[in-house]
Length: 112
Image (tube, rainbow, N blue to C red; front, side):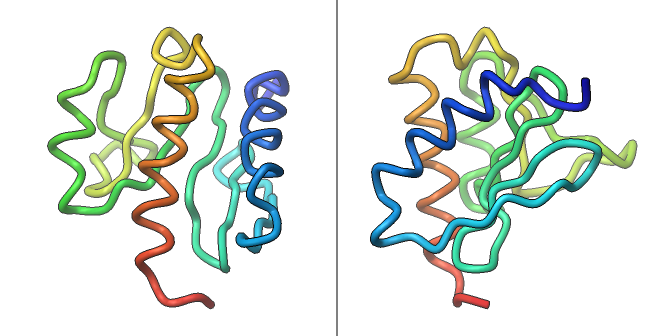
């Protein structure tokens, strides 16, 4: 399994609540599933982890949160991207908080 389908469905449901204001597209990337918002990568699911695009300014704060670690998909940490372990996503509030971090950064970018 390349990504946790249950976690992906939870993210879909949260994004569906805002479908009128967001242009969301799912793409298979990095061996997992990414959620693109207005043409920019916002977040994704890779195995049991959620990857969240928080931007350079939000990177240190995101890493200070429980269960977060640098996204090091290529072997080198990617500034502005974090992984969140499943333990940090168990409650709907926790998942929504991480998704909102990704949306806050992604919506600050020009649409593609």
